[in-house]
Length: 404
Image (cartoon, rainbow, N blue to C red):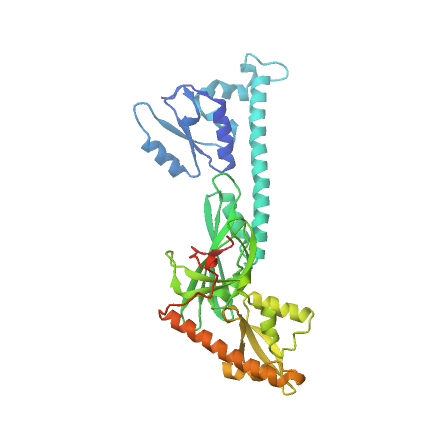
């Protein structure tokens, strides 16, 4: 069965690529005189190679298994290289030998190994760039630097896809995310495509949501935490025409899609929610028109519950607020994080001396209107018919959450 062979040039190209992928176990059809690309297979472990050889025995096929780390290893181990093997160690055995050595054999091997080393070098450079790119993704998305070692290890293994696990404790609540990485069929570059975030609330209830990303960007880890806590987040999206738009998003825990993901309520800019105006209705000291105001509004857009200082009857009180785009307001909490009831909101609102009575009456009317809107929403959740608070073009069901 150990006859001499002729190996096609294309096979040598395939061998180089396989070695670059750490697939060092080569199975070749020893029954054939001429070995072409269809007659070789490569594996990362010996057992897989032996299993393939065992499963492909026939009257015309018999596969041998060898371990290779270079083209030279192939030339030394495949039977047709018996004479060549002697030539590699004893140039005088070659009839073409000259004082400069076996020029043909040396040039062939040197060329093969040069191409192999070049491919390995290029693959190493590409992996390093991919590694740096994904590290930036993880940092931007708020997953820190603890994943770097596992990330680099998975990149070197060259699998089609892999997962990383991120765990943290946010406000004394366990938060976990399973990060998904995959490379497309037409590329050797990996991309951070999505992650599944889960949060265990204080009552022991566990909430989860799959977050889909666009080029490694989208809803960050902290924003995902806020969404799972039920708060809204303001993000930039792209539609099917690749046009950018901004919208508030909030999870609807009462409705699930076919993938058991929470449906996403979306409040487009045209919905008319003005966060600055909603915050400005209260006597908040941080609304200074400068950096403090900018930081406050940015934090609320991220979905945070933000600490603020409110003036009341000449004294300063510490309170907390969060955005409420559905009712075009903000939700107010006292220092103990107890929600301020609607009928008590007026005492914290800004009142100008010149028209204080008018402002107070306006505040009372707004409270009544908010109560009516909230009542309508409760009735709708019970099954009553009514118009959606969302623009119709944004009420489609989504498979997950991400930048479209």
